[in-house]
Length: 501
Image 1 (cartoon, rainbow, N blue to C red):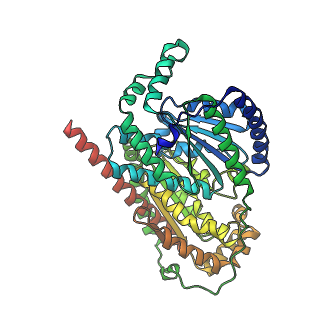
Image 2 (cartoon, rainbow, N blue to C red; image 1 turned 90 degrees about the vertical axis):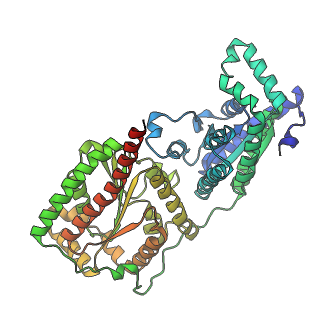
Image 3 (tube, rainbow, N blue to C red; image 1 turned 30 degrees about the horizontal axis):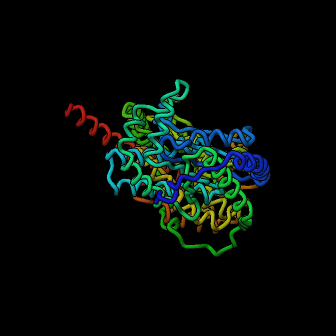
């Protein structure tokens, strides 16, 4: 597929000067429109070694206003990045709306290198590229304009380029011994790159392949593609806003099958809770040693007891090793990113706990019911959430998800109790009573959410929370079961590894 960009195109100096003057003005103009239209743009610069990726990155920063551009050259993951799933560092680098991010060495580098060096086969490469396209689709659906530029030079041109760079002291560092070794395997790399571009050039995020041997031609073509892509994106009509969910009759859902009469006597509660918390304390220390992270997600009806359950979890934990994230309306910073960004940013380090009081499920609950999200947005969120959780679990994180359910009568009783208790009054607001009027819509949304996101990797645990003691013990005990299964698995694997050594 690269034959069409090995034609030896060159741009005369005079033409380059004229185009440069015009394009610099256009880039600055369209950059202001990006800011005014609150559009997030990612320019992904890939290509063959020696093709001028750094030069194109420098061009963007030279010809545009750098105050609104973030440039990231992804190299080997840092120690901090290795503590989280691989996609974490890409999410953290995403530019907010109204700005431009320029990336090199991003999510394509690892699968290309591993396949070219024979560390993975074609099936593994295709699987990795499928994950990449899903990730890019999520970004685009979330409002990001993804511009992918691939710079290509032939094997002969690469050899000539390396030779020229190595002759000069100030540029010799740009060609490493690994670059020279990769050059000897140029044909393998060419095949892998061709397959990669073909499988990941999609309608929403197409690759633009640029003949890059001539510096002037390369620069002008890159600038033109950036301008064209942004202009096309800005010309699209905005997505209409959502509308509140219509009132519905009382639905019969999976939540209606829960036996809310289950309870626990005070003495049994004290005995079982103490035992479960002691078990959790031991498991948390083993998890820290085994570098097993834990994420606990709490959703449920208002006043269902999420806060009380969380307090019973954190009581036996080392305060240095956990964070409780209480999710409210997004801040301005969070609104400027994809809705999952604020959850990615709080992922725990290896061996630590993060507990979410409300979570990413707000997209398919409150945002759906209240009309804050368009139907297209919350409907595709089920897949996005399953993909997100799959990445967490596949990285080795223990993901425990709890839905706490109470009856409407018990909820009203707890509301009234909060109003009468001075130190609980902060928990009750007019919003809580307003949400009761939409109880049927929330229950229907919750039931669909549970059905679509209770996967083999990340199942929901439904908790009968009418009796607080019963609910708290069930939460702590089931968390221990999940954590123990993962810790034992890791300990066993490490033990087998030690024996082999």
